Length: 344
Ligand SMILES: Nc1nc2c(ncn2[C@@H]2O[C@H](COP(=O)(O)OP(=O)(O)OP(=O)(O)O)[C@@H](O)[C@H]2O)c(=O)[nH]1
Figure 1: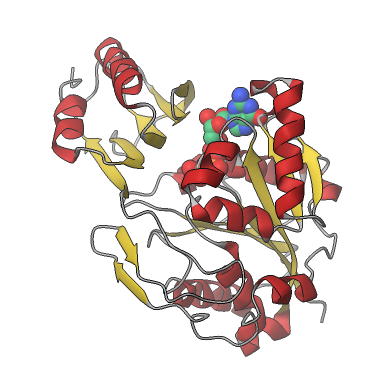
Figure 2 (figure 1 turned 180 degrees about the vertical axis):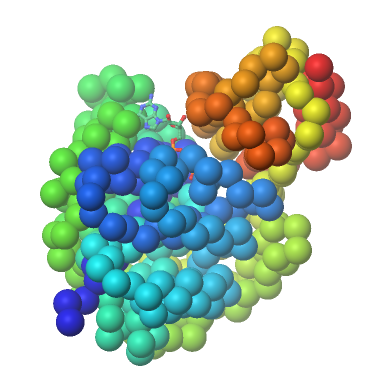
């Protein structure tokens, strides 16, 4: 039996992973992929933002995929394999705060999974506008780039040619071997990211000598999965994978069953981004605006926000507005007050 290829999509918050995933699901129409999405936050939104309703999307909401969640991944992939039928591949989108190595490890360490699947490649989407700053303030960002087999240098439309060349040189320094594609909205020929047999175990071992050793690669973890704030206390480990998450990053979920007033909401959001945009790493939401029978999808990274009208609300669907904000030093009470102030 052929092994099922697995592609891990990684990259920092808001880099363009879901955009790539949607491109794969749309362009590879007729193929059957199982999609596993891991998000950082209590209320699932990512699963809803994946376009193709024919695909089954498994969401893991446990926040950090880097360690304990691997158990969930093993369970989900294990269940998938039991009824795999004619699956053409498994696509795993990690949260922007995850490291790809432990996810990749799963496909080597779990015997049953290793026998049936083959890690095809780790694809890292890098945000050309924000990567340089992330490499300074977010250790995961460097690990994601270092561990990639293929890098999409995305959002090329948001920077000038010199910046793009500089960011590409930085990626090259972190990862001399990966193929790098400059992209806008993750538009890369899919033959460049899928079915390439790109994963290089030797390189993984050079970055993480314990890659095949299992366990938690020398880390000592203290997670608090209750509020999805996660603190790690990591003993120094060999290789690039010694990690240290930023404890001040948290995810806040906002929701209401009452319709929101679009004008109030937009002015609240623009004020919020003007005053706190540096600290807001990522926000996304599915909103119910008064008088609108279609869902409004909101997306943003720092000061850049995008809103689009999506499909109509279903007849039996609860018209619930949900928004997730991920950032540093957020004030939950103030954000909740502001959000609730937009109720129509
Ligand atoms: N201008 C511009 N915007 C982009 C590009 N690629 C993606 N975006 C936008 O950036 C935002 C984030 O894109 P996503 O694909 O959701 O990013 P992600 O990496 O899945 O985000 P998380 O899962 O939250 O980490 C969305 O508003 C996209 O429309 C690009 O090349 N240029």
